[in-house]
Length: 74
Image 1 (tube, rainbow, N blue to C red):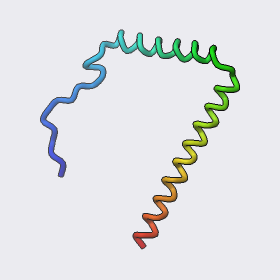
Image 2: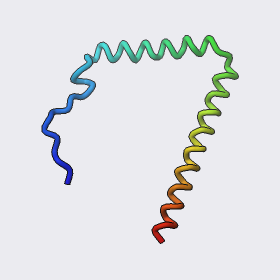
Image 3: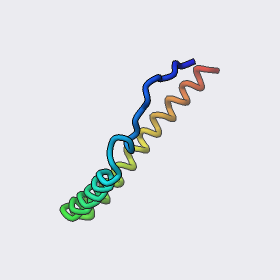
Image 4: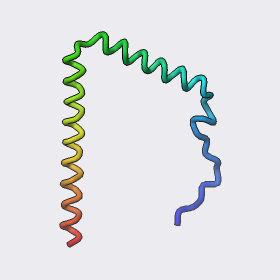
């Protein structure tokens, strides 16, 4: 069994005040909106499709690895 961690783990809420976290969220949203205004909509669409293709590629790698593991177990 794993040993219990005797240290107390601090969460983000314990370290960074809510006001600061809200400010970061708002700043991130504003930054994204300003960047979207700089690039053409086609770029954003292409980036979205490319991200989806990368995720599908990783999925196929994971599926192939799982298949090999299952075949090895038999």
